[in-house]
Image 1 (cartoon, helix red, strand yellow):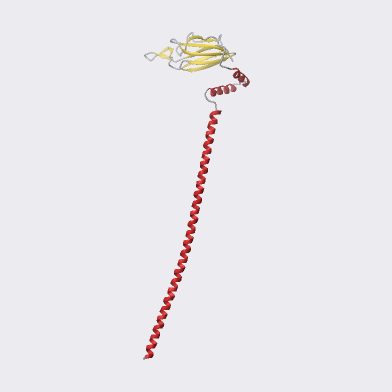
Image 2 (spheres, rainbow, N blue to C red):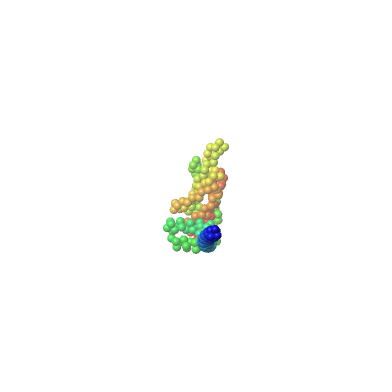
Length: 241
C-alpha cells in the first residue's frame, strides 16, 4: 500500500513539472514572438519616420524652389515692365507727332514724288517766320453748284499764278426743292490751280485755309462765306523762302 501511494505522488509531480515545462516553453515562444514583433514594429516605425523625414525634406526643398522661381518670375516681370516703359518713352521721343508728324509725312510724300532732298533741305534751312508779304487782297466769286455753273465762278491771285474755283451743295427752300445757290452750312470743295495746270483741293465747311508755293512766292488763301451764292477769298502773297 505505501508503495502504490508513493508511485502515484511521483507521477503527479512528474505531470506537474511536464505541464509547467510546457507552459514555460509556450511563454518563452510567446516572449520570442512578442519580442520579434516589437523589433519589427520598431523597425517599421523607424522606416516610416525616415520616409516621412525624406518627404518633409523633399516638400521643403520643393517649396524653397517654388519660392525662388516665383522671385525669379517677379524679377523678370519687373524687368519686362521697365523695358516696356523705356520703349514707350523712346517711341514717344523718336516717332514724330503733331506738326512734326505732318512735316514728316509731307517730306516723305515729296521724296516719293522725286523732289531733290538737297533742295528740300535748302528750303527748310532758309525758311523762317519773318517774311516779306504784300497787302492782303479779297476777291469773291459765285460758288458753282450742280444746278448753277454760270459766269463769275472763279478768281485769280498773284497775277494769275493761282486760280480759285470750286463747288458747293445746293441749298433747299421751304418745300425741300434745291436752289441755285450753295448751302453755306454744308461742306464745299475748293480747287486751287497754278499756272502749270496743277490743281490741289481743300474740302470742308467754310472757312477754309490753304497755302501754295509757286516759284519764289508763297500764296496764302482763306475762303469764307460771302453774300448769298458768293464766297470771299482773301489772298496774301509772301516771298518764299
